[in-house]
Image 1: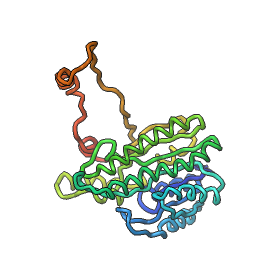
Image 2: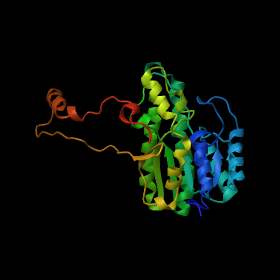
Image 3: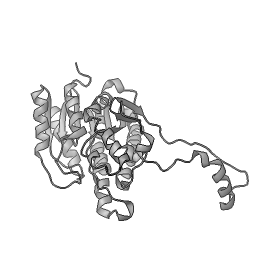
Image 4: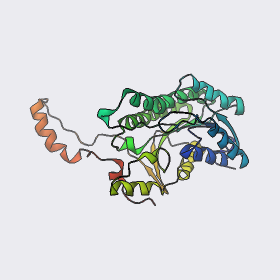
Length: 303
């Protein structure tokens, strides 16, 4: 028996890349899968509704069970429709993988309102909408697992991606909130930050030698490497894991820290701007987080 045998999973953005790998892995582990994808380009334009059906055929050819959904998660009213697809086909929902996304990279002072809103709409609002629709089912059946895709671009940083960084960090907060609010119903919620060569990372600049080396490292990391962790988090074997942030980088699996106080200062007399300036500059200087991008922090070759 597979690790998620008989469970029903919804995977958004499952027509290509990491989403496709996750859908195939879940099916191989015995889950019935709703393959959701509207087939848009990297920037969210266009549509190829045949992508979801193609992945369904792959799953069925391997002996698995799946149905396609081409509803866009960026439209709030579609969230319940995606849930209904699972209920109509398989009678329940057990796992929701919020993977779908787009990018609209721009340096911040040139970022347009549509660049900002479109990315937030798909990543954050889309993840909220589907999670909220699934939460009713999870509460009634007293079980369920959410897996949300975040990014080291948000957790650490990346130039020209303020919109994407904001959305991916907000998803961490959303996941933590779900984990806290729904633990009484045995519902779990976790984040995964994947390193993989896909459409999302194919836009990474590769002009300088440092950038070219970073892209070369990315190209070693297959989307299939991410899928086993997602399947595990959706299984009953992960019943005690919730509210966490994981990262997958080829054959590495990392557990990320979460914000906690590093240092404190206090005085019985209270503070003035001047006294704060004198104390903070000396007491906190060694603990300030430098302005780094993810490649500055995770710089070793993938293993």
